[in-house]
Length: 287
Image (cartoon, rainbow, N blue to C red):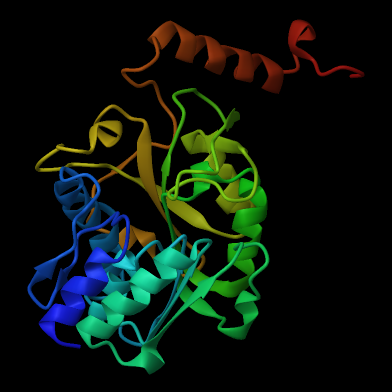
């Protein structure tokens, strides 16, 4: 593919969520400040995965759910992954990803991109996967427990979740409505959910994972305010890998944050303790 063909192909897409350098031609990213954001996100949650495996993904099979134009799939391939499968609900994203990989010269035997509802795609045809990416997806779906169950069936070890979260103590999901018209948003239902950190912990533990909350320490917060104020976090989970070998900074699963007052937190913890002690005012109905 020559330069003129590459530029014409880039221009044929109405929107690019990520910036790629395609043989010297930069894709026109939808929001320019996200160039910094994606660079910092890579350092935040992608690099620790590579570090966990000794500096390379060689020998690993990777599943990228909600892959968009293949940005994280490409990072995995360039980190040495043997095979990457990207799944997205929109044909435009699969077309972009295939185009990106073609220009980057990635051998076709090392990747595939599939279009469809992730609950309907038969992932077992490519399984098992050593690593699963779930980036910017969980808060666009209505059934997060089903998602973790689906992932667990095809994932032999590491799961990385990057998601918006809600600022409450305890294990909760909050449901809200989201338009299906946004190409970055929900495709299945207009009703979607956002978890707390502890809800993530409880869901992954239910399917045999241990996990840590990665602490964002960005060198530049441009485009990343939600990480800075505690509304978005990444979680590195594993069935087999020893997470104690991580050198990336982590933070607690629970604890008060700047976004709710300490009395609310301690009140919540006091109620939990009272229920555990089976005090009369806090007994469950029928006990």
